[in-house]
Length: 118
Image (cartoon, rainbow, N blue to C red):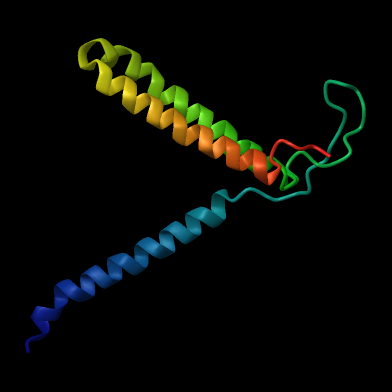
């Protein structure tokens, strides 16, 4: 094969390497210096017991899932109110089925103790 046939490949490879090096150097130039965050009193005036970016306790995750379930319910109910007069009974049946699925999810969360705080 001719060397001229490889010129575009070599040029593309050189551009790719130059681009990666350029992005790496640019990232090093604008990188923020990381220092430990200091915590101080907030609105209550008391010193915090834990850092603001600390992890949440695992008991909050089921509560979050229940909140998202009800958030999704409202997300679907607003447009549903606009469609009910046009569609009629099938829209009402579908919404009650959807609410039944959500109620089953809340029942499961209740059974698993997502609402117990002790």
